[in-house]
Amino acid sequence: MKKAKIAVFGATSHIAKGLINNFLEREEFSLHLYTRSPDKACRFLGTIKKSPDKNCVIHEGYENFIKSSYDIIINCVGVGPIDKLQGNYTNYFMVTEKYDNLVIECLRSSCPEALYISFSSGAIYGSGFTMPAEENTMSSIRVNHVAKEDYYSISRLNSEVKHRAFDYLRIVDLRVFSYFSRFIDLTDSYFITELLDCVLKKKVFVTTDKDFVRDYLHPKDMYSAIKGCMKFKKINAAFDINSARPVEKKEILDYFSSEYGLKYQVSRALKHVSATGSKDIYYSKYNKAREIGYKPVFTSMETIKEESKYILTA
Image (cartoon, rainbow, N blue to C red; front, side, top):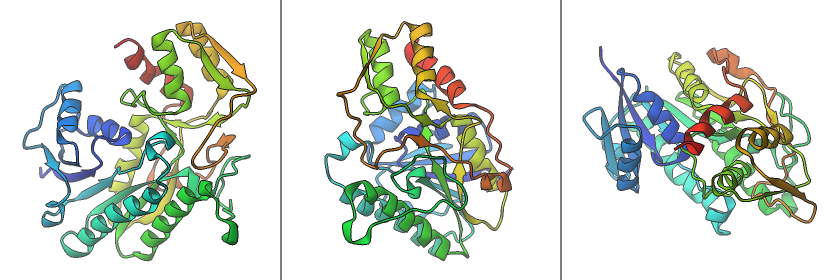
């Protein structure tokens, strides 16, 4: 049986690592990993007891991508959390456009039948999350007073609308609200990474007095969503990809406190900074992904429990 040939952009990113791990557990795929850091990609393969071979090829840079054809192209390129952005918000637009246009050029020239999976974000709905996203949720932008917190939302919306315009191509945008796996970089400035770092270093975790609800997607559910898209010969759509159930901040704190002895304190003076705006209730009730047969197996808390074990017992 012919193996499906898959190109993965941004192969050293958090989401890409989970996908690579899942794809390499099966024999029906041939992976081509595109990255600007081939040594980093090779080291990652070593952590999952794999190595580059004819079914897992590492490409340094993207110069030769357009010369090949693929069955599936997965774009995991991102700009990272706010601290790594270093105030350069232009990356939301320039980086997104650069790699997205490269894929579309490939689809239009050498592989028009290929499936293009582009990772979008729940941030597309805007920055003021006081309730879950739904089918008719509207994003409101003050055109004459666009804030920095709006930049990412606008860049994702621009990308998705462009994809819908190419309605004759197989392009799917998967909107991820939160994602967590054993491969996360603990130097990233997210709530969950800072918490885990405090557990490992036996430090007191200081958090804001603001509660929140998050939807942490499991790597296997992410893989399942992509497999669902692969079944369709004609598809051009966006889907919110959710876990089986979201989780509240207190539930996370209580678990790590009882299971790993986490000490934490709540500070009213501490302010949470987000490059994409405040998100008190950040998940979706829009279940269009059922159309591709997507049904999440893991709840957000199950995802956190299972994946954090690999980090805290390593």
